[in-house]
Length: 223
Image (cartoon, rainbow, N blue to C red; front, side, top):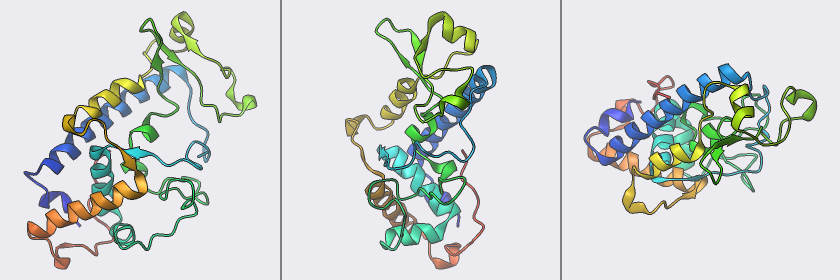
């Protein structure tokens, strides 16, 4: 399915594209910092996702919905029809799969917090960058790092590339929908509404089942 071609010229497509640019910048900054710092998440961990459900901004929900429609139309149908079953339905992200070594079933469409957690810091009261390793990281595998805050000269010794700052990217995302006052909604509700919204636009603009809705190998959305 090529849902994006049915969204051309819409505000929704503009939001999706603009957030995609932010996601590309996040990846570029994080890759540079990870390369310099030699810090990376453990393979097959996923502890930060367990029992956690993100709250999504409008642009995040639209981007995620578009990615699902482009890459897993069967999942999109299950979500819109209330048939999706997840091991995390009770208290976590409904798109998290604890039995999979990759855990996230929508990894390339994932939201801001999921992209930023672990590889982003913040600013202290003086406006200096600071960073703390992920709290889920086992002590015996964290070396040479420790579970504490790094800032100033210590942070510069870890990497000559500045650690990405979460609020910088969050601020850019919030600016995409200035009239929303930063309104967010739980992923399980936001993504279903966004899926239905995009599909309604697509149908109005000429989509039907013969356009590729059943395609098992749809064109991928970037990022």
